[in-house]
Length: 285
Image (cartoon, rainbow, N blue to C red; front, side, top):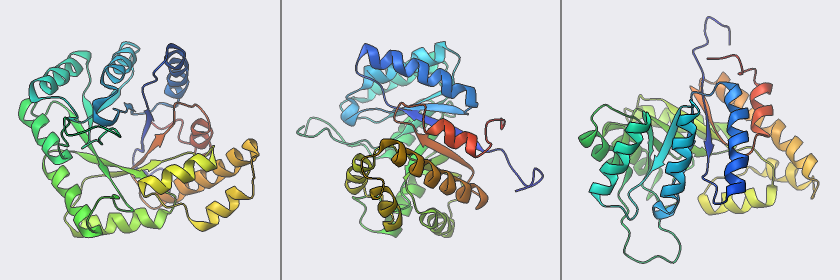
């Protein structure tokens, strides 16, 4: 793409809230290093049923105090409406202007005390109580949500979330760029015209990635599985091969018109930093 053709690429990084003091100290150094890459924002996840609520809030406040743009993930979980309004008001007081609104998941082994409020309902709730005060991100699934009744219905669910007031969507990670481009085309047919940002998962531990991907419905193409399996247990080889694969994926996505990239960093500097540098995105603002 030439400079004349290129529109600004949105870059964002995702963290999960650490549970230990050591983890929090490590994340501090990680985010300060990744912040040098000029991301548009960092997002911070919210555990199943809101189980990391206080940890998420603490990380968000610390990052805002450091002058970073932060988008906390949010779902109802076990919170009632008053508690949710109070939390959103706290985020507003911190200077947060972006929220990732999700249905969320039930923690394993938990009974009926928690509620699953669909993301379109959460978006509408936020817009009702804080109209126009947050940029709202929602989730999208190029390879279909594991619980969706059909591909078409899943796209319609996404449209409901965007129509309720969300301004854009971030996808589940994937490794087949054709899945993303087909998804974008099908979304357009349903009247979706808001940006959909691909989620990118760097590869460092193939066994963990394969197990997690099987559970969440993210396909690892056979050629990638075979290349990574050929690395055996050699961590350096897996990381180098994975970095090459993910860099090529990102290049294909950006060349094909993806509006930006959202990296699931797993609270690590590498290989996300190397991939960004490979893509020459560091100077984009």
